[in-house]
Image (cartoon, rainbow, N blue to C red; front, side, top):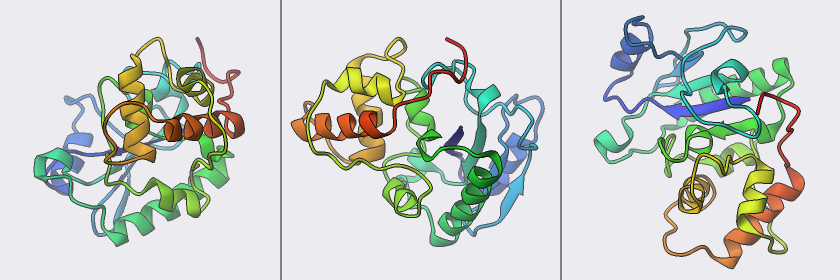
Length: 208
């Protein structure tokens, strides 16, 4: 799979320094600057330390089953600024190449917040997931009928063992309904049901 992050650091240079510091014990395969410069820090077929604890489907060791892409963006340190156009264009190019070379399904492009909903919120609600979906680089719901939200969330890939319903809902909203608040809605039930119906996670990948 591919996991998208934001750096939550004030500058790309600071993020690059940290990602290259062995003492920090954090790394990613790619770092993309606000101006669209791409740094490959770890080979695609090598394990990077970008995901931490969490899960997607049966994958518990996400670092060993994923490519991590860090987007230089301060996130909550600076009021969550938008991701600039040159950065998004560079991401689309890198992501398209990764998906093609490694035959990764679109449904396995996920947010850090998807696999660690109790710990992480990146790349955050200002990241344009719908744009990626329109460019066939991720998925987007096309709701028609409702289902059971948690059952469908697990079918799509969210790990119910690690997070309560409110955390799953928050992660879902960060990605598919940015800015939404309040109780779970019928529209959200229908969105999750569509995702589960069309993009059920492949449980043969990873370890329980």
